[in-house]
Length: 387
Image 1 (cartoon, one colour):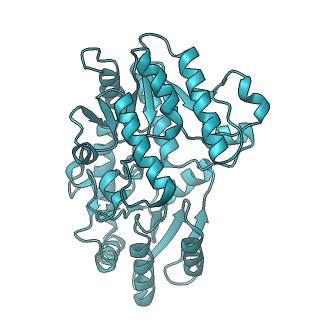
Image 2 (cartoon, rainbow, N blue to C red):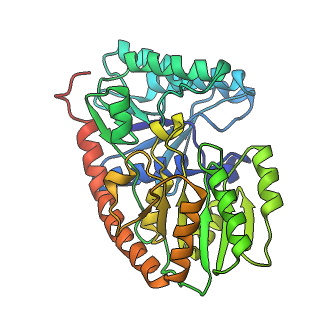
Image 3 (cartoon, rainbow, N blue to C red):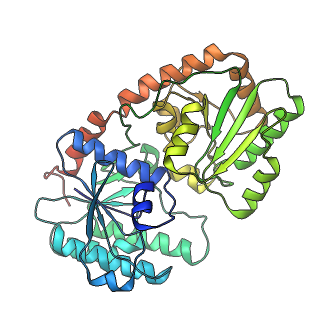
């Protein structure tokens, strides 16, 4: 299985001298590949994200291994449009020289970079399969939004009818009749046993945007500081636009009541340390926005399998996957509701630990590499399904 993607990780960044974001998308790509390895498949991550020199464009892909998964690092060069064009040519070259009859090609999201390779695979009678982590954004304006929507429409015609999706809700929204939701997988032994201190440690990470609940978060921190009657501290990791970063920096305070530590983008090893020291993980994606309606918060899988108590808005497949004893789902997307839930967890630590344990047990079974790998392999290599 050749997994076309535009991702990197800390290992590849260090190897090629890059400084690319290694977030939930990269974690999911690697976890899915390890799940396929658990059931005897041989996945290869094919990434066109890491830039290089123009002289490398004629060279074959560099084959390396990262976190036990083979990776084909394609040659790309330039910035913005030039990088996308060179990536498109490299994906096409890889498809025409490395994909053999009987192989499956999975495209992580509907990026325009894949279109030439998808055309080639369709003409050869071996069309690729889309893995939709996001649906086409109807609220994204300008050239970027238009390109994203047209790229999705084109790739839907070029790829197979069956589609891997990030959620059941996304499949229903897009009218996909043959869809397999893959939420991610977890790696056994990746998180140490956590120790719960007197202060409730709350992690808010990932893409920190208006659509992912930054206003809820900021409002809750301010209100908790105003009352200052429960022991809570916040850790913030991930990436954010400059204006949101300015507001978070104003809020950051390592001392005093309700401290907030703003870490920003950190290496994966540092992120694991922060994750393992937390008690609660926040997932505040808003249901009203296009992002909330088309995506599943993949960090929810990481939060729950790591043993944290998930506090989430009621978006995507969250309410259909997790019960009240496995996660805390906000009844409404309001600052008051979030503050009430956090105060409750801070004052009732045994309940917090119980929900975390229940959620972890459920998530590790539901998102086990054996289960995810078996379901995905059967879906990818089912020759009876029409292309």
